[in-house]
Image (cartoon, rainbow, N blue to C red; front, side):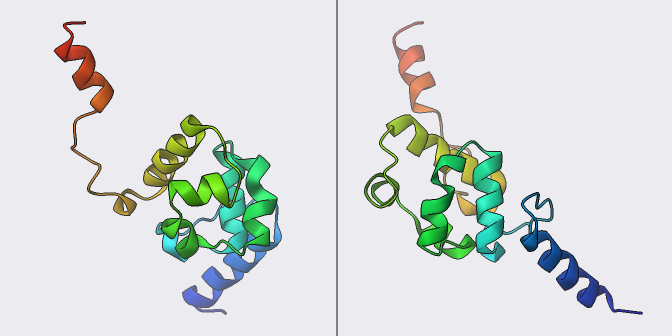
Length: 116
């Protein structure tokens, strides 16, 4: 019988070979390139899947992407899509952006200041 670790490695390898990969490490930094591609599909960024694959983006590289990277390297022109990308990444792994949590929403603050 295989050890728990061996079974986990096997499941991850099988998952990576599948286009329907549901086994995702909890830490984004541990994601493989196919797991990043799966995440892109799930959150509506599938149109950029090939560009991410061509550039070899795994979980660790994903965490290092900036808005200018998304705009210039991946041709994500829409500002809203770039902002949602960051929020989706935070939702995938809360440890990615702990500084954002607990900060007031700027849009809500402006509306409250205007008395709306």
